[in-house]
Image 1 (cartoon, rainbow, N blue to C red):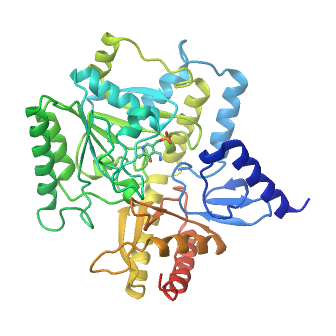
Image 2 (image 1 turned 60 degrees about the horizontal axis):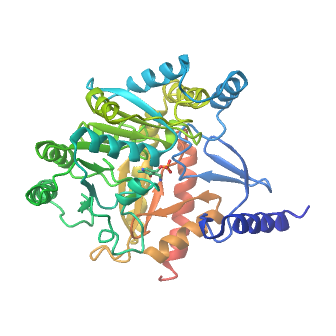
Length: 438
Ligand code: PMP
């Protein structure tokens, strides 16, 4: 068989079956057949370094995960209404990472969208209110509710204007290019939130919750100014609402120094949502929260998810937490992340298009600009950098509302040698792209 023809056939089949929903990377995406660690191997045998895959936190095709899920599938997999040891094993293991003894309940679901949808509903039921305040530049999912609080859709300057009436959007605490920068930025973002909360209360629309990514993952790993998150959580609590931290992207040890983004940002939420890394691409998400919040839902009705908490998902979730612990992956994220940050910042000395390196551990964002003074986003150049990196064997994608940030969030198994391969390829590709004057 001609692999080129096969590849074209695969694209046609995908487009025909999915129509406009056929989202994919690259003009000519490689056909990936298998993975190993931070490597993806295509049908023609070429290996790519996967620098964006924060779903596969413990690396591709981890044998401990594969074996433990396969074993469970051979024993039993069904809905979660009976008693299974693995259900208790996973939920109690996840609670070992709870940032506060008050957050002592876990509800497993099957995705990040579901986790956020449930978190919003829990907040509404627990407070008896409808209104949700969300920070801009966040993505929280595709379900009706999680999509309603998402504003990260790029190319849409009206993202904040097209929300349903139960959603209110405040500025993203982005100190690099946001509304407030430099000295006093945290206080000014919190003051803006407080003002908005007061206006909503005065209009009889006091909010149930404030939701944000504690480190702005979809903006490219932007860490909010110190004190912002604690201030925002204090503000929403004083207004009678609860604080929701969407840790789907930035949680689970990837930041290196901390297991949770909210921990790094110095605040404790009332509800945490996780997914992605939780199942390493096996469908698993979860809500971690306080007992009284879940009890409020019980009084109102019920919550049940057929596949959420199913034994095979619990086996996957447990294996992921075991591997993160036993292989020291959070520490690896810290060490390799520090190395990467230093090398990337050094690239900035030679490449004027490199505006800033955001983030922590193995959640970094390399923001590309056309001008360091005006911060004009280098969106075209960023797309070109990603396409050219593919030719160099590196998988890289753009993120942020402006699509001008390289999202560096590889499997947490990334080695120093692999990090160096990425930086060397980026160095060459940036030189090429700079000469195009995009
Ligand atoms: N929250 C964040 C921060 C995300 O990045 C995503 C997925 N990109 C989601 C929620 C939704 O998760 P899922 O795709 O598993 O529904």
